[in-house]
Image 1: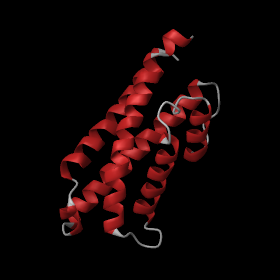
Image 2: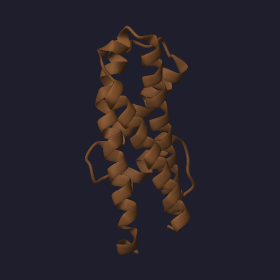
Image 3: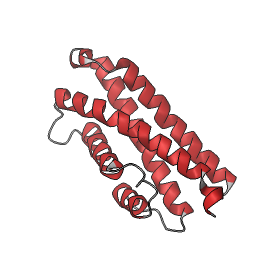
Image 4: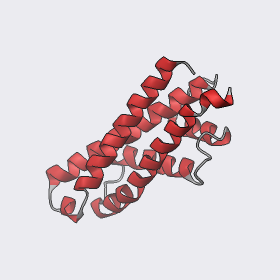
Length: 144
């Protein structure tokens, strides 16, 4: 993996971390009563998940495979051991992507209470994803 790709990945990881920090700072049951805060949290979550998906696509391409849809990219990285350092991380990323889709498209409506609980759980997984990716990319020189 060349340095330019590593820098792009690091930049996307930084987006994930910044969004996660905002969510952690502002996520409370208050969002159930405050539409503006709720929409802000949903938008930050959406951007964090999209940045994570971009990272997955870049990592897949760096392993000489064409990037595909978000779920396939995650599966590929789990199978290759990139995301296997933390058990269940791949499934949590897929869950985050599904929640992102539901929030954006409003499939069958959104239960804000359930969404709030899910976001609270998944931001920790997004933070873990960031750590795993940065560790994996920094270890590349030792592997190859």
